[in-house]
Image 1: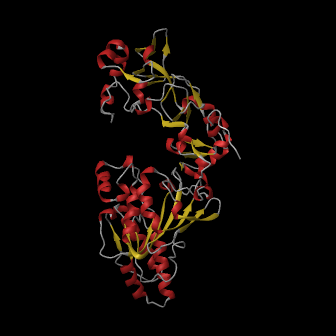
Image 2: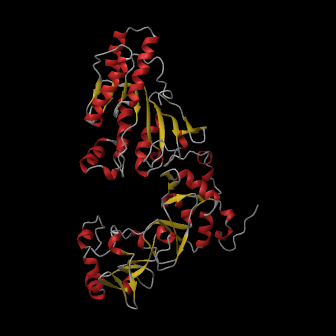
Image 3: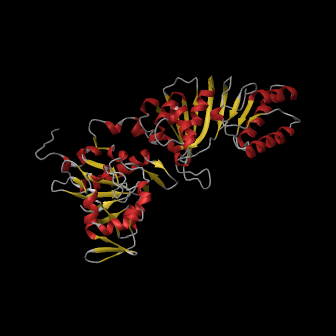
Length: 474
């Protein structure tokens, strides 16, 4: 990292900070190089000590790590005959601290804390103070990158070791927009693991506050390859492929998958424990679950990619019905209670948890938390997982089956699902999701329904999609 950002010579007198320094692992190398450069340029030990006190900064919120960092730095400088350094290592939250000067270098590895692991007070603070955290389920390190950019001098440089999922996460859109103008290099470790027990793959981003170039370098560290891409071709997601960046996938010959098929996230009960039934036995009229019984009329076959893979038979309570025009209908509360008393009795054991869900305003306590995915379910569909490992596994479901996990696909314009399956099984689609998907670990990537809908393909390879009687001429 230090070599990539040029922190190896002519650095004496230049201000640098590692703003989440921990025990000082990176700061020790920064200090070592600073001393080495000072000695090379004939500065005395007294001048070097003064330089360390003026130019080297660190910030660490944890008090134990803070003291460990100072101890480690003292141990290092003692090897050069330097002692009693008044270090500018700060024991504070750097996101809430301001300096009256700016830095030549910001270097580090910020803390990774997902949105779900942040307390409500921290979420609100980040949302109100950082553009990168205004929308979506942001990560804690988004604010560190934004803060660090603002801490740089007009000619300052930044290098950060961060998860590479920020290239494509929807919630990181604002962050990507902040980074792009200053981006000079991306070192992407793709499937290579840098840390034990960390599922997310890593990357290194290099920024230069003074840069005004239209291109940046992309380094595929795993494959040991380097590419030069135009920043203008970084769209909603950062896709690092020659095909994506040359706009080949958006030419006039291509059509969008979402124009012929609808890819959607499966139903969201917001409390599957109440609705999905995994252990049961059935009779002609009822399904029996422990000491309860449930009317079979209210039950449908339930599927997830995992249950299909394991060949498990599951049921789901489906508190809706479809009319003769295939429109989704709700049971009024009094009708539901009268028609399905045993089901109501079963659901009552979960009523407290069901009422605590962040459900749609119009949802009854016995209904699913979200209803938007239900409109198109009453027809044949395909189901696939949001996680793809090596190859895509596609399952066919009938009209009445309910997918409660994964992504389901239904046809538009009277097109056949067999065509959709053929497209999704193609080598071109597999290469596409390798580029747009988010790497989860060394073997799997996460894709979204939007990714699938946005896939561009050549309709000439699928003449079944052409309207009847359409004759193409050369």
